[in-house]
Image (tube, rainbow, N blue to C red; front, side):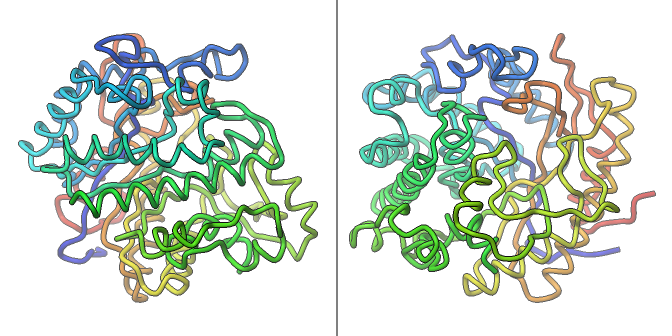
Length: 431
């Protein structure tokens, strides 16, 4: 049995647009994903988040599932357009009331809320009125929205995550158009990323006032400015003027603006030799979002998303983060897998493949801790099946199977196994 540190936090995670539904009631405004899902061909099967898992109405049932799972923390996102329907201005009190109820319900059940401020659901009004993430003023909009969240929920929420996977917002949303808002450009991803980083800095500043080259080009793109105040030198050398410049004020706000490192991890590849900047930029915009020659060992198994199952990859990444950013506290805020055939309940409930996945990845996390990495918590993705963005409901990551016609929830074998891990703070072998 592999035992984890005494104060290790076990949890699970979701995102508002993927589970809440109720997109047109109680004053919620439209998001860029509501608009994107209405464009034919953008979402698998024409699916939308209009109903999703109906979490907005069934959150008490879902908190009951979390309690039975035995997790001590739950990461969820707040839907910006549910709080500020127009992205700024008047606050939607019904939206605030929903999150107050959810947070209180979690605390009553001894589950610590971890809140993601932005998980890709930008209010549509900000996209229409100011070009969304491409406008430098968006950073101040983020800060104003965050201030509302801090003021309304900060008395009970101690852990805040500013942005979820900003790389996806920048590249998939503005490079290849695979995600909302569906823009295709060779330069916009860098501007969107730049403004997201500024938004992060503004959010953190608001909070504090009110209360190996391939990795550098992916993780370092967003982490280096937060820890060091600027982009990796390798990006500066290769991209030159393509990368925007941070002002001195931006750099001061960015540097040291993170209390912990939140890592979402789903895939591992091997990178090939040096390449030209032109070929790297070309790959940046393909559907996979790759930016180096990425290779895979044919012996590696893959998930239903086509992502490689390589447990040692997360250990190496954790150790790289530990070295590069001077031993920061790290929380894994997402890690999980989609498996084929899980549209059939009987198949999904016996998800042995997911058990093996978690066994491998948690084992690798344990090795990283033994090697000195300050890993303090793990949140599996996801507590239940949900809308997997452009894949609609065709890809299932949940530890709970959801019947999207009736809304019924059925815990899978992985749910029970993970419950034991949480209860014992240790990992038993998969039987």
